[in-house]
Amino acid sequence: MKLLFDENLSRKLVPFVEDLFPGSAHVTRVGMSSGTSDRQVWDYAGQNGFVIVTADNDFLSLADTLGHPPKVILLDNCDYPTNVAARIIREEASLESTAATEWYLERSEMAASRFVAELKRAIALIAEAPQRWPTGVHGTRKFLLQRFPF
Image (cartoon, rainbow, N blue to C red; front, side):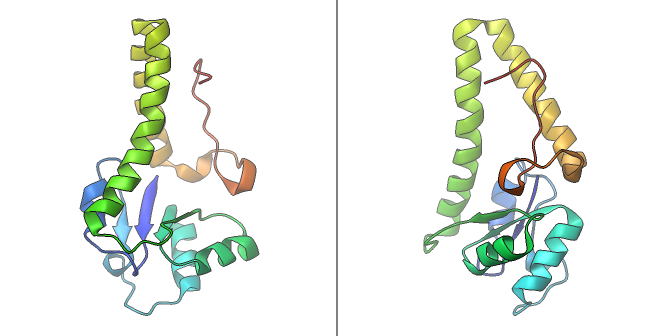
């Protein structure tokens, strides 16, 4: 998954998350100037396989009106420093994978090891072609891990 940070968020967020979300960018780094309309950002994100990260509720209205893609991650009440916003994004992604890994580890070390390998493979496949996977609930994309139901 590639993240496209809206202009209302700092450009400094990109380096904080690019190891988890390769190919991520800030709108000002992909040729959009300050004041680019939300619709133009929306169209660019959809055409280029980005998920929009924003503190702007207007993107939720666009999602309701136009459907998906792209997806929108709203950082509600985002009046905190860049490093805090980056930590929140990283923590949510990592909490999910850690919980699943621990669940498998409680059952079998080998199962946990295979799960981590499968998760890494899945992330690489998704990053390669995010639109390839079937649409699920609320327009999200669904990638099922083989043999790992957690």
